Image 1 (cartoon, rainbow, N blue to C red):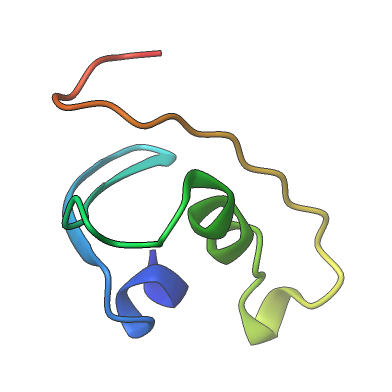
Image 2: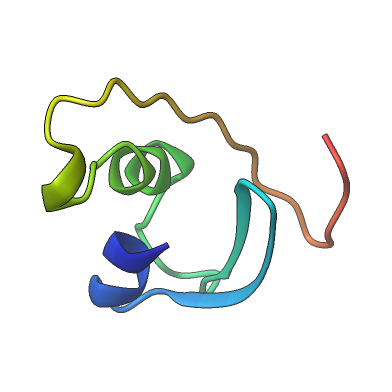
Length: 63
């Protein structure tokens, strides 16, 4: 969550290992961009293999 918030994106909720980002419709921020931010390990976990997946929708749903 921290890298996404520090990059200026609005996290409107989070559930366990998920984040929900509210982004303007005219934004060029993509799901791939969000996944890249989520795969950035904190300094204390350098080298930790992380993976992320996501989807874009108009309302929250559990994938």
